[in-house]
Image 1: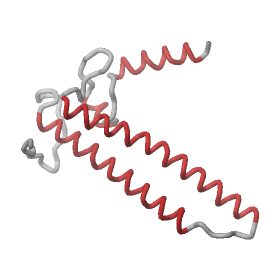
Image 2: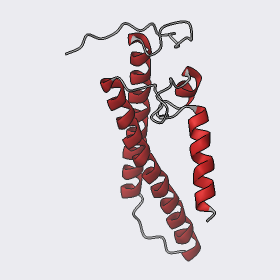
Image 3: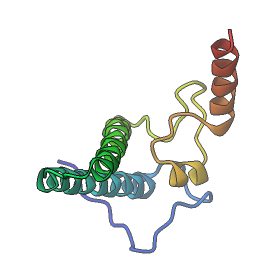
Image 4: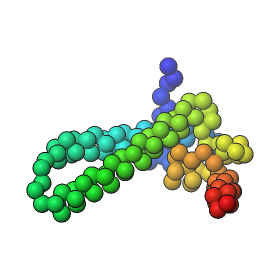
Length: 140
């Protein structure tokens, strides 16, 4: 078992320290875990709300409105389920030492990008190239 890295509460990764050092990895690991916990808590609340909300509404318009709200909530939860899978993949990359490096070029992903989107797998430039290529092929 690996020892836990000390991380001050106000710590933010900085460009002037070694890239993906133990403190940066711990910072992103905690950020990802917290994000995952928040999503799972929201999902539990949704499930409880859907179970509690299973009632017979006589007015057709009110029933349709509630069903639309439920469908939207379920779509949101499905997107979040996929996001949890990406978070788990990022946590695995932290464990294997691949986190923070572009899967296409091997270059370091900027700390600002990782802080904004900790599940990022590509540098901004590689992501833009990927999206341009995807758009070209999609238009065919």
